[in-house]
Image (cartoon, rainbow, N blue to C red; front, side, top):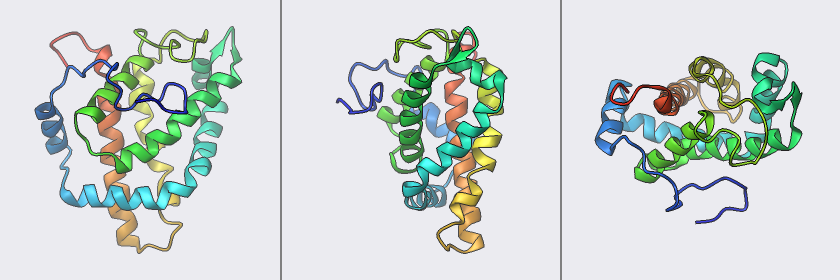
Length: 194
């Protein structure tokens, strides 16, 4: 499967298979109190966010760009690479839609593993052929759960849904972001300890 967006390899047979099995994924979802309501709420969130992804990314990129300790992951010799930022942004926009719309199956699990490897020294910078920090430090993957969750609520509320519907979408988003961030941490953990 090829995509017009460089490095967006969702579902490609060339991706490494996640070391986690679908049973592991189900247990993680169970731990996060995942329900069918969350599945439905994420689909609704996908509809709400579909034509807002550029605005969401503007906010997130503004946040990263205003924090040099985060912007450095897109930089070489402290100079940010605008092409790298743009390439990642395109994939990040698709991640928003994938998070809401894709089934959390083996293809989804394998692609989360690919994203994990691209954050880790295993594959960082390879997809885009750039020189930048050799990995995103583990602490920022975990810390990013909050801003990526907290900042989405205003966008979920922009289409006239009730406060209760927004809260359900927001809760499902929080669970999904936590799940993906957790999966992206896998390469940083000693074999057998994840």
